[in-house]
Image 1: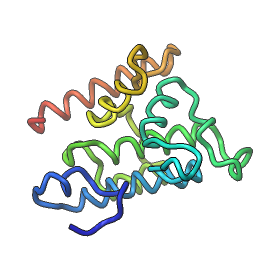
Image 2: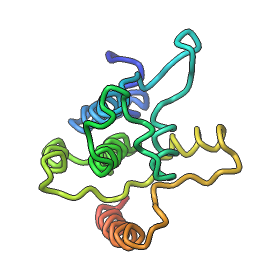
Image 3: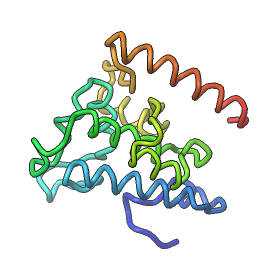
Length: 167
């Protein structure tokens, strides 16, 4: 097995067939690093430790994505752009490759041709979050009415897609 720790899709570790969606997973991890200016996996030698996507899930769920932004990018981006990029990254790092977008869809979202739906929290992150914040239910949904309506619509689309794909 070849690859860089922190970027390998779950299917590499599971030993199943590898598709282009493994690269989508790696891209999602890279996108998180671009947004934040920090590595996705840090150790105690770097002054902090943890799995950065778990932090993103919490901040996205709390509507605090701007706090994730690389200090060099503060004031250079709009909150909606950061949120869209975080949502896209979270779609890219879904545990099951069938749930990840294609690279073509990633490009369309980045160019603004496709809206990015609210992603579910990948099961691997749910487990990490449960260990780190046992009393805090983290999800990718927002409380505001306009976002709730969009989330409900997105969730319905996601459920329809999941049901039709057999996932």
